[in-house]
Length: 187
Image 1 (cartoon, helix red, strand yellow):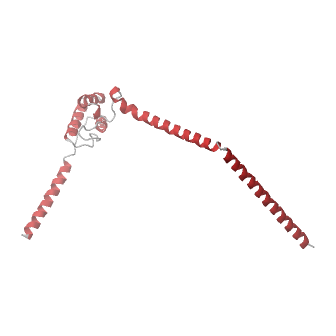
Image 2 (cartoon, rainbow, N blue to C red):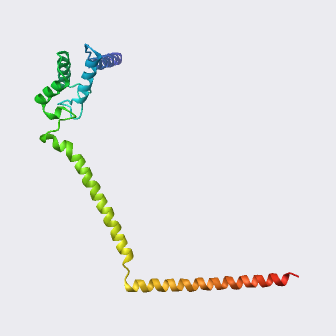
Image 3 (cartoon, rainbow, N blue to C red):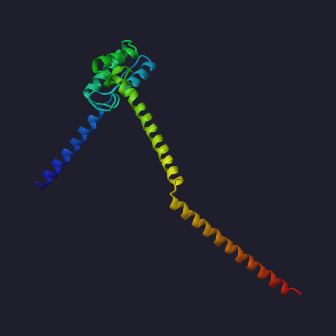
């Protein structure tokens, strides 16, 4: 019984590993293009176009069935000689502006194109006004002293000048004492 359980678990592990590894090979798509330019166009388009099922993922990064279909459609349209503009227009007509990470500028997409820069300008102006107002308030608060504050500042300055004068007098007296002592010590 113990051997049978180990054997069954081993077989299940191997089968599970094989199933996972073969599934990863199923997502590889190989397209042959007439020219390197067509291949570059294809890659640029599937990078630009959004998967309708996967939110915020382009066709190149999506393995959803609809993304695979749209990649095949894009490839086929390039092979048929359609321009990038025609391919984009087909996608817009079929799936709306949401299909593109770079939607066209038209009244229905103005909010996408113009709201972020307008919002940035509003925030910068608000910040500048706040900074300017803050500086004006600070200057007004510093320059506007009451009568009692002015008297107090005058008292402090007077007291400070007297103490500085006292220090100067003490230094002068001390210097004179040293000078007198030095003249006495010299023969």
